[in-house]
Image (cartoon, rainbow, N blue to C red; front, side, top):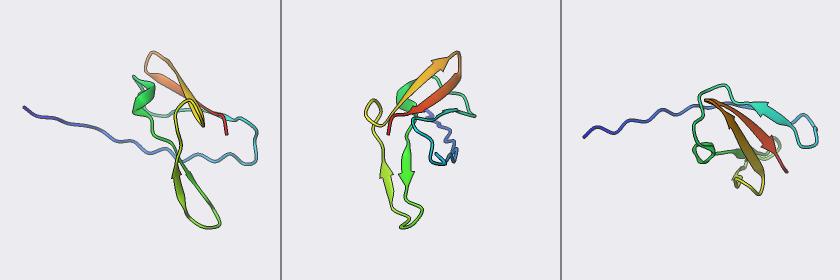
Length: 70
């Protein structure tokens, strides 16, 4: 049996917006397939965010939109 996967990376910034949203620029089929990391510009520290607590994802076909809750 062969198991394969594809990983995509999309860098986004909030630019000081309140509750911004972004179209995800790769195919999305399940909201749990998306992992969101917050990176501090000043320290470089990465923090993994939680689905439903920090962000939500809506899917239409294979197009996803990420909504940042904060």
